[in-house]
Length: 408
Image (tube, rainbow, N blue to C red):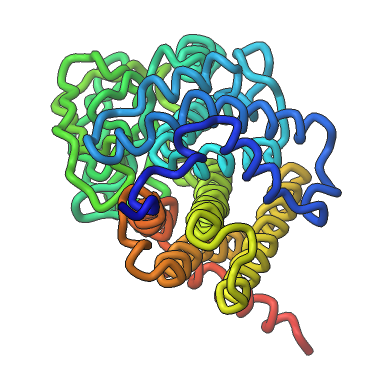
């Protein structure tokens, strides 16, 4: 039997995973990293190799939720990287966060999706919630004892937040929340839900407000997970709100400030998606190297080296872009266009690298045992969520138009 149909060593031996992915580190990208950022990457890589990678193929095959993998990351103190210490975080940089997502995605993209959704649910609470709300919900999201979801997308309202049909009607002591959300990551099990709803349907974006909802409250219904192309170990479902009573203190920011909460939150979510793209590209590259070495030994054919050179070059470019824009975000200097370029380019990289890797491996690229086809399936959705890449092109184009208007 051809041993290429057997699982790769990097999936069965943690030391093999660590050795290969350490080999793929690039000094050009690492030169700008702080000692602490390298430490976060090293710790994440270790946890991924020992506790995430061994269950990745099983989760993909069965659709079993990657609970144990996420719990291992939380136990290592990695779920609160960009949050303050008083809330259970570690007050690290966005670069450190991006490095962690890249490592997790390189081992199991589904785990990285659940991991980053914890941040996406907690971050609006951090920037717009009361002290009581922050301390009640954020620590549980960071220690993994509670799962969170961000509820924006609706059956007839995706990227256009101003057209939300979910409503929050003022009642005594708070609001009555009614509506339906779809394509919600971890929506089937969310304990903490950040829901965006219209408090004034006539005001467009200015009528959108944000609320934190406990998943156990009456009127909250969690849908059955969808069957998907990829990210099988991460659940995606509908969430329904039927007369849910939300206390006024659970509104995030002032009434009508939901659009601002969305815009301030998507900065982190687009870093997440971009880092997934780089991690998936690296996973496809690493798996291709391991498969070709098994087939040819350490001396690879020149025609394969040409393709591998292109992959390595593009991955390094993606890493440099990811790190640079993440650093700009922390400095408050990243424009919407820069963030869009990062998100679009890095998620396109994850897809393109996976396509190249499957082509390079020929018939072997289609085998589930090698895991390259999983990279391809997982990469597709990163181009869609957190602002589709078509939306990113629109935002980049608008910024270019504004710059042109300033020319004399």
